[in-house]
Image 1 (tube, helix red, strand yellow):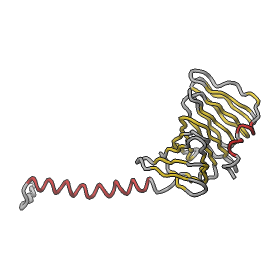
Image 2 (cartoon, one colour):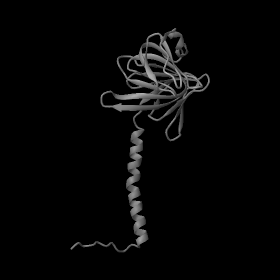
Image 3 (cartoon, one colour):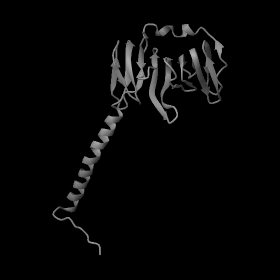
Image 4 (tube, one colour):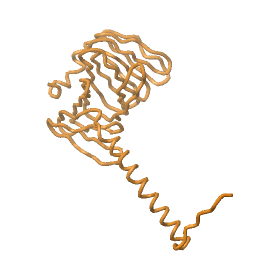
Length: 219
């Protein structure tokens, strides 16, 4: 026969309130430790800025980098530059990303068992320069109409106000795709991604002129 254990000495309402408070005291530290842990390891570092590089955290807090420095960047952060502003961030594996003026992007990532962690830059507007450097390192850029992915390349990607995306491959190979197909864009070539269309066939271009804007930022 089962025996029921009855706790006496506390009014029922107070006992329930105490149980809730006790549970709250257990759950809250766990929540806080998980939140802090998720924010404890930066995925990149802000290294240089002309004007101001604005970083908006997931909790809405804003931080700014002006000139050379070491500003931690976490997954989920939104990076922005304004007119005549530029910024440079570097990932731990050496991938460099420069933001031209009037650029906005969000830092994300995807983990796969075969490829490990892939940084993802979700651009809404502006222009970025990316250089992987020193061996294969996966990275992707998402725009409103296209995706550019590479493992070893130097590239420039511009998002126009209407969402049209312009990819210039400075060196290496970049897979540039829309919902209608993917085009391999090789060294010294340019391609356009538009809404509702396949990316254009690569055409020769003066690739170096496309990244002239990075000269004062990347050292």
